[in-house]
Image: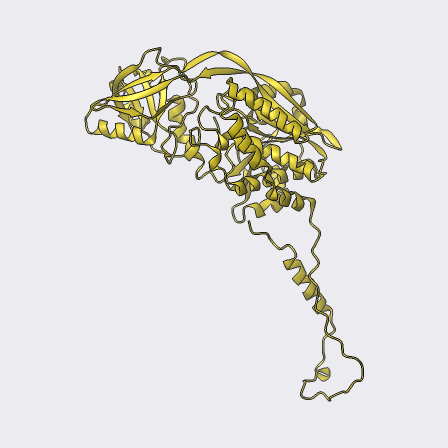
Length: 501
């Protein structure tokens, strides 16, 4: 990143100011070199003294904090450690248990004043073995992945003809054809918020009309040859049928075969199982405020993940960059006026049960939460923040964070908008919510897939995000002026971030 020269404009202004203070020359006193009489002097001649470098204005603590975060590789190192030595972190799995231990040890080593865990009752789901194969009109393997919380195929494969449709409207028009078939939604990518509805609601929609299983095109706009998982839901009024996603390529192939009238058949085997609920843990670390320790600035990411890839962007990045941002204040000797609380939530991916547990455990102190930030959109180029509060508070935060705009010249904004799924539960109770925003152009290329690995992390972009969150912490935890309790929000509390479950 090209460093700015903070002295350049002030130095020029100082020079112009000095020139403007010199006495103006009158017409009668101005002489040209040709008309001036030669004057001989016996005084020793001295060389002109070259002007020295301009005096640099003193950096503010916020400037120093940003520069230090930009130069630090702590977050990159720790994210690599999380991905490589802990791996995927499905709620209830040994991987998540390793992640909790890693989070506790890492925050203690980073110098947090106190670190502890809090229990949460969570769903416990396992994937097991799974496979799919086209059996007619020719045989070939399909690259598939079960949806989280889906039931399996009951110990034996299911084989049926594929009924392929493009969208909800086409299925509604052809719903009488669904009985006994595997319905495939080969829906177009229309952004995550709209397209993900097929994953969440597709199985129950087709099961009401007799379908034996549901397949979907992976919820992504660009395929990297990997299927994308994610949470689905069963409706109470529909049979529970297995559900899985195919790669964009395999879904397209089956769809085109159907269009050609070939009536392809698929055999599907899934060991996916929903077990009794279990206990998992949120991890919490605090840097105690020096003057107002009872007031809390909460920053967070979710420690759980799906069980494919190493989940660097979703949400290893959010976990690490919020922790690294808080640590950076300690590194610069900037113990904040208010307490900074870092929360690594459990079970975001399967329903936000870590966020619900936090609300229940801390309900009595919600009025002392100044704001709650969630980072759950990866570590791509920073774009600013969205604020789930009324317009006056949004404007106040935008003014405070104006110096952070240099992290994304021409792209930075602080606007009214959503926060995140985990913090939504306390935001709905009146806490100001903040969403950490990045350029999500390529986020859904890897989201919930085996392609979400550490190799997709850009260290410079990660450092800029750490700097941005560190700056947010500083201007809210340190500035004497209060944001105050959030008035009745003009937005629905806790609007989901694009990361999401």
